[in-house]
Image (cartoon, rainbow, N blue to C red):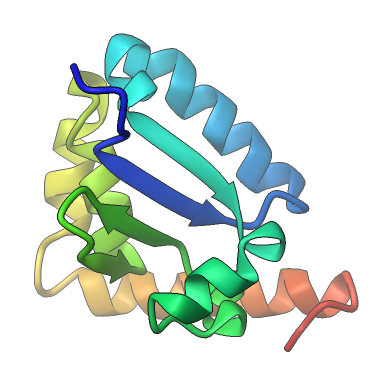
Length: 123
């Protein structure tokens, strides 16, 4: 495996739930987890801007950069991560279903905005 991560995940490291999910993911992913670089949105704002991503948008939705530089966000970003972990592959398939994706996105967006609002960090 190369030294360069095959995925770069931009996430909200100030969020306790997000940190817990990252820890769980790394534990479940095992060796595959080593190919994922976790980047705190608040610490990588300039890097995000250089890639054409508004840091505020990255705070509101998970963003994943693939090795080829392509950035995916939202439910598609979760699918990319989950496909790498055998126990999560069925969930990746499920949340990627066209009929379910918009509903999950709506719920996720509402949850994130409520959380950031409670924390006084809503952009």
